[in-house]
Length: 379
Image 1: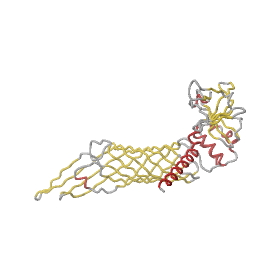
Image 2: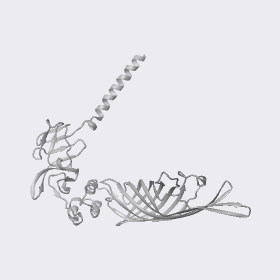
Image 3: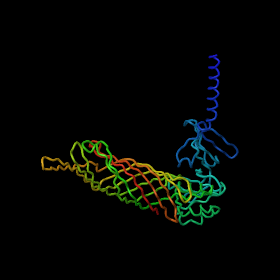
Image 4: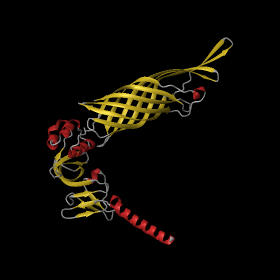
């Protein structure tokens, strides 16, 4: 009985492993392809030489002694194992017609190609994946009529032309969205101003002494700042740095072992979050999530600890002005919010939490926890 069960289990594992290998084979076994004028070869090794050399020559084979080189005159199209597809086309180089391999970035009703030579990357459009190419001008702002001719069937794409730049990410997103005729605005570089309210609370880190037993209250303050939002590639991620200013004042009274204390804090801080932001799909109202690192520097860093002791009818005051908050702090931040497009401006409403620690780990300092509720306007 036991042997029969083991035999069945072994058979099941064998067939499952065979099926898994067969099912996943294209994902790790497919290496590349070449299409000539009358034949096609698939699952072959094609060397990725980099963008510049890939546009000049197709190299097939594993070793130098078995490699075969093909020019754009010999091969119509070839593909690498990473999914990149190169297509042979005639373009003008230094005033002369030359046949090269163009990297196909988007394929559809309108296709987008690029060529990386010795100079800047050049981009080309073609309708219905034809061989009739039109090169995109470096100054896309003055070529609105050119793009309108290609995307006239989609109102959102026409509106997106005003935000288009001659970069791979921007053009890829623009053409891809047109082929689907999505209602999403084109990601674009923006900058703006922020105003909000922060709720700051001192937290126990590596601090010692009487402050280690204190439960600090939150302190509200006005926060002002500016930000930059730079899209990354053709996706919904963006690089989002900010610079924020806040000023906090705190006065706290407490007792420890029958001794009375007053703790007073006055500081002004510049905070610079460096965040990665993800914008969820949407039309005019879109939610976003963000997270990243924070650096803060105190422009004003004053604190005093007053200790009161009594002897008979006399009260003695001892003052300790030694800093308990590091002048330089580092930490993390995470949050989210909503972005609303209104004409040529964007409004951002966000809530974020930041946790900061003293950069000098050799000294005992209080940490800082902070919630920031902000309203921003982007241009």
